[in-house]
Image (cartoon, rainbow, N blue to C red):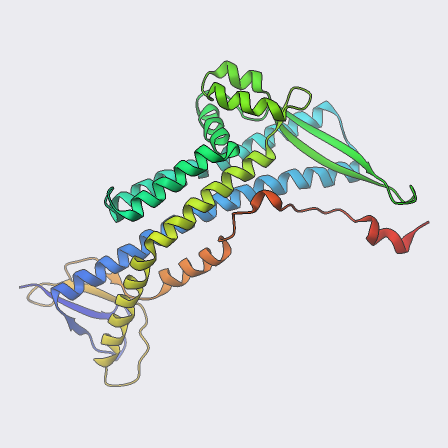
Length: 320
């Protein structure tokens, strides 16, 4: 007859193993899987966010280099475009990875008729229907997968910023990753009505991809926010289950011990382990909390930007 226990895994200590019922073991095992499922999706979303940061840091870094070295040649632009495409393709891969994993996990978590499933589906639909950048980037990601690179021109630009007295002026350097709508159209993958909407934003025959990329990531962030709301009950219940199991193990000890590498496991009638250990700790919960705190504010992403510029106000004391 099978037995179940809580004990410290592969550690020689004076602590005692504590017996569990099979039902308790199954509940602990399910809690462990649920928290790790939630954590995996948070980690995948974090990879997506980090890819956005990498892409934008590259663009800002190239602008800084251009301001110092003053290069604006076609050769450098070509190299910049290749690197920008590499970073953007990585971002698209991470977005697809996130959406695929989210769909796979919600099928395990919720019935398709549940409110949680419907809210996630409604949020995805709203982002697609109401945000041009979201539906454009969904199409552009598909275009990049089947047809070609998404960036067709990488502009280095500099504008003059003038002070109030037309003195102490500054040159602002920046780069623009641009897409050619005619090339997109010839691929016959991005919907024609989306391309028609984008023509409003054409500049010299090209479209700057940066604001649309931010709209897309913002939309994915809002989907992830709804997923978090939907899984909150599961997260809290699973955390409570593991915390209760730790307390149960402590109560079975003869002294005041804190568990190290505590696990639940099944044994045969002779007490020999016959299952993989189910680790009982709050590590997954703590990592979930950290990632959610770091990646929680995406509703206003398009309204934020980073700059390495030294403003005219900062330069005022140093007028020459």
